Image (cartoon, rainbow, N blue to C red; front, side, top):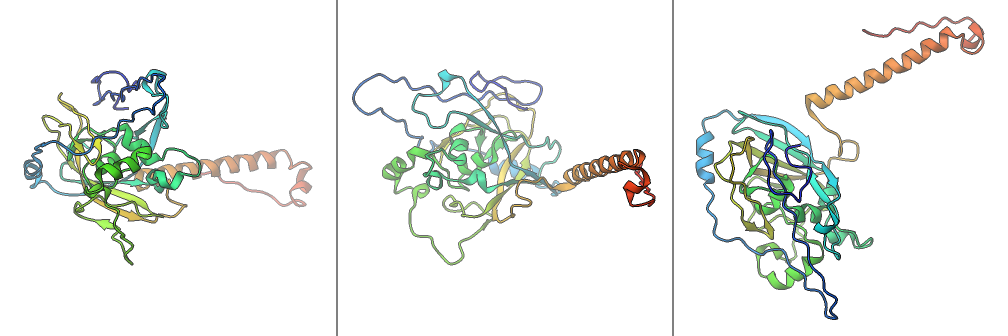
Length: 320
């Protein structure tokens, strides 16, 4: 992994660009009779200048290729009790599976396929009173930089932070609506048009709402590491800062598309490597079946030749 196994520790830097994830401060609860004060997610960003044009200009002459895709998945971990407030509904940490190390692939694109499970919002899970996967991603803030992100940043969190995708903040959604109802993120106008857009090749004017019944493809543009990854608060997520030299690559969100992959392929990897892995598994299964049949034939099938259908010979060929 590129980040430490103890997210509560301070930032460390190991052989592969590991970042310590600073946990949210624990809330101290005193036994008063009034309702506890809840800290809302930060609202809007301070003035932050990110030289994205300079980054793009520096790689403009490099060839562009699409490098394939990767299935979005997360690893869950249990934080220390001291790092979780008593009334917190999200009591685990969710970290995205890291992207492949795409060194010397500047100006190329790569797609992360996000199954719809990770896009479930709190409103859709009210029956069980459980925090949504999307709310957990937004709270975790596994994202370093602003517009240009380290390649071990969570792409879903980066899409929310950069304004491509509308986030979910669980129990704070209603409070944010009351406090920030006039901001673009909290727009509640009726958007039940016959054909709402499913593809965004440029960043939308306001974060795209999750399209029900769809998975999400997030395509990123690979860019070189920058001198400093700036922290900012955008769309109710405060990204993290990384001042030290980053030994990986960076990316920018280039495109998002809502798609219906279907249950058969929704959680399956694609590409040449995944195809080779599937072929290897199928070949191993065939070899195991053939070996079992050989043993069955050698033992007489429970009754000599008659056990195999009255003298019918069996020939099994196992490829090299």
